[in-house]
Amino acid sequence: MTTLQLKNIVKRYKTNTVLDNLSLDVADGETLVLFGPSGAGKTVLLRLVAGVIDPEEGQILIGGEDVADIDAEHRGIGMAFQNFALFPHMSAFDNIASPLTATKATKDAISAGVLKVAKLLKIDHVLTHHPKALSNGQKQRTALARALAGSPPLLLLDDPLRNVDAKLRFEMRLELPRLLAAQGATVVYVTQDYKEAMALGDRIAVMSQGRIRQIGTPEDIYNAPADIEIARLFGDPTINLLDVTPQSGPDGAYVELSNVKVTLPGMPASVLGKACVIGLRPEAIVFTEAAAPGAIPVTVEAETPLNEKTVTLVLTARGREILVSRPAGTPGPISGPAHIAVSGQTAFLFDKESGGLIRSAATPMTRNGEAA
Image (cartoon, rainbow, N blue to C red):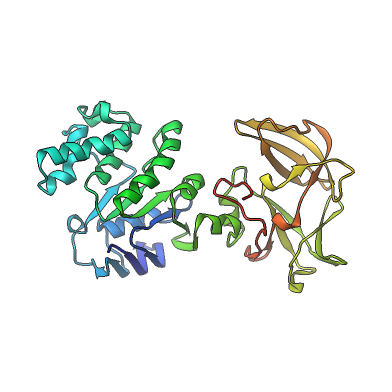
């Protein structure tokens, strides 16, 4: 059983605290995605687990064993980092084969292991090439293949698809979960791409400024982001955030958009009259007829086709901007006056002062950001 436990980890560089009392558990066979902006401490965390650097404080346990005194090469870890770290004097084949060679596997086993991952990552045609003859995408895939080839019980993957072209990146989002599941490895995967995080992670740990802000399944984090900042990070186009003050009405708490009341079911009395922020996912807003109940008047400012969807920028009566997303080919206004429909069931409410979540959307969303 290969579990990973980080207990109260602190890492500093001079006076800069990069990881601040961070604790994290990764279950056996789980793929945990570390997600967050650049500088959050994700790569430093991986290097600590790998044994490349040491923490100032805290414990790192792999399979329940404290690895403080175990050198990197003896921790049973497969690694693929952003800088490739390929051996320049070795072919792509030999680079990928290096963990198998270290275990003294037979020649046939080495060849079979290399070809298996090379075909999956679509680099079997460049196995005879040296790193200097490979594109950045091919170097990235070679480094990933090397990490996978030895079937290590613990995999650390630092944004391994960053330099891969868009088509292959999409394909690998589908293939990698199957490959990792087949290997049965425990995986810590770093990315700044929220779609990749949602596609690959059994759970996602959202990091910021050396701390874990929220951890949960992709659906948990999309449907109930812990605060405004996390809500902004998950979604394309980004969530609409508007300052509001909930009021009490005959049907319960409500807020106003373009002087139209939007009822928010299940609101605690404590939010009434309080400065809040309403969060509306663009895909949860639809264009509607003027005569429809609850229709909110807006002005269409611009429309942007984005392949599978069309994103429209509209303005409320007070000039506040709202993004509306609809599937490509769906009819909608191009300019001028229009009306939108907003369901209070799909709205988030955040405390304006703290940014913390008060109420999550009652209508769950899938990993693709569409209503389930």
